[in-house]
Length: 443
Image 1: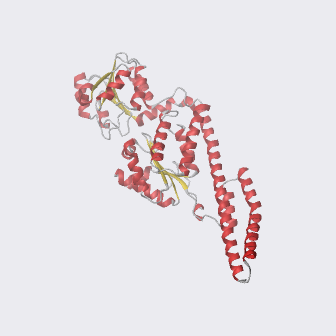
Image 2: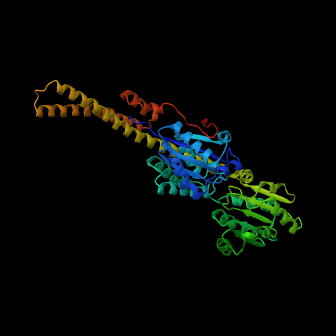
């Protein structure tokens, strides 16, 4: 019998990996397809999906070979991102089967985000799913898993208040700015970037009624479109150093792979400003601003990891909603796993019948070879009779197996049936389930 595939997740996240490592492993959207192709060259990955956000980089897959699969993903991170294996090992976690299901349901429901309840993550998961699906990297197992995750996320939004008055990284950043400057009415805000995160930030910025809003982007037309939509002014990205001297608050959210603002640029801006304070809010991963900027006097720099600490304090009033959402996840995980057990039971029953037919066919053939004088009709009758005997013998076990599973049986029931009929899948004996706190070791 062919071994049973396992769901596997290998990745890093904000829970245990600092931004300087996350940004090295980050895979931009325009590189996701190439990364999927590279991963899929390993025969150990049957299906594959990559989720890459500012908080996490995770590879979801199904495999018949746990060790080879994990090793292939580990090597992918090392080779493609040129990271030391020893450094990577400290941060990488591995989840298997039920732990993968629980983790994805929490991620999609925004229960594992840096800011609990933030709305962006579901869209990011959907986009990763779309890229993997449209390019035929998904099979039955991941299609089922992610379809269920989207349904669970919707249920969490509809049945809890976890998404009401949503908090985002950009809203946390602006709350921090208010604590430093108290009011925006006499301040100029410079927004660098024009994507989804930038527009989310813009919505929070205009609610504070700043004196001026400036928008810079490598593509001037994009900056112009965002600025005009919110009554701001588009500025030339090439003159960013000069434009910065006008701004009290600079919020960056671009997809640039390297720093776009460094210490020398900030020092020159401060000279023009006559050392009036500047606040930098870098909500991009990879980071847009050189962390050395924070060492300059009268300059305050905060990145997404700094904002996480503030966000944690802001979430203290949402424990009840979070508990409700986690309760939904627990029920949905059980439901999903039970549905997989029922599917497994069908596969087991098919395998039992296949094995019985092989035995029956061989015994009939051997027996009939000893009686060459038998006529065709008699031989045909013997064949039909033995088929009927096998069918009747297997009928009651088949009914009982289905009943046990429908009444809430678990994987051990299927395991026992396999043992009874001699079709046990030895590859499923060992449990590799792990969590982010107790991840599997990778050699």
